[in-house]
Image 1: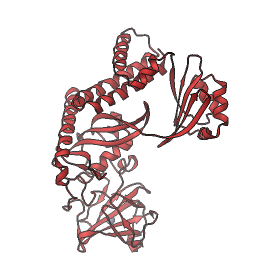
Image 2 (image 1 turned 180 degrees about the vertical axis):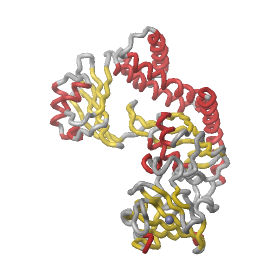
Image 3 (image 1 turned 90 degrees about the vertical axis):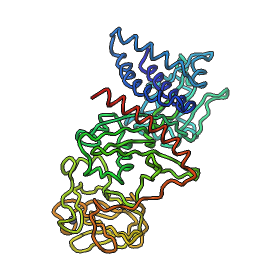
Image 4 (image 1 turned 90 degrees about the horizontal axis):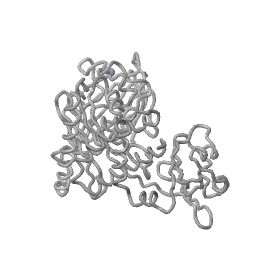
Length: 449
Ligand SMILES: [Zn+2]
């Protein structure tokens, strides 16, 4: 069995699990466990290619029987048709050529090669983007049946053999989401924990964003904090595209548990709610600094706080020059320019007589000037050291009716709760998801500690 074939089985396994999740909600909990245990086994399968250990043979056969037990109709046709076909998949390398790609895909088909090189409808193949994926289905002799090039996040090139020759067309990608269940414990930083759990950065920043109204991930994080998360990985016909959305998550910070469940209403609005239907979003974010791999590791492990507001009128956050600064709430820019010791400064007026101020910026985001409407989490400028600043940091002030408040302690008004009419649907979803999270928590933390 070749590595490519093993990879295909792994992909089939993935999409079959997804089908199970979709078609049978009662099996969700079961599926969660299946994903958890399937992943390490695939690690073993991959290793099998370079190992002759006979013990692995037993594991391999067991996994294949699982994979074949749940084929989609399309996949079944592929393997049970009159003719055997091979599906290969490759990532485009820097400096790659169409000829080199076809060779790696085991395509030996001169007609296909000239079609790809000359047909106008297949012109997207001329822009080979490193890192993107190509797939080919061939017969045993290497004759091309179909060719797919995932050249952009939402579109792909599909080339198929027809009785009259090859046909090429651009198609829209409709990604299929596979749910992934992960958990982790904070030992040094959020990113260290998500790295350890194999969670993509995009998901890590989403977690920080979802809980950022209660936890400032720059300062509040503690050793021993734990999280469990269910998120989407998006696929196109078994080929991994990118991380999707966080579906539900739990974060235990200093012994306090926070939960978030994604719920979309019939108007197309999506928001994260706690189990009781309270909107996780608040009218103000706890931190004005974008949480990123770079800013999170800056200025000591958990305490990039330089000065608290009692020492002056605001809070100073150390961060590397250029770190994006977020508007902490919806509002209108009252001032954007240079002002004395503040250097480059932005002041935003919000509802309820609240204003926020951001100082020492290295620069302003495009379009941010007096009168600009900004929304919560929008990047308004970048960390710098203009004005009276000894090093790059953000000076942040929070005023209610012109009176300074401690932004880290002030009680923040809550966002709109879930509308009454959605409550029943939400509670069904939340209780099912909460069960998943609880099960995940027990299996992972129970096993390893
Ligand atoms: Zn300051």
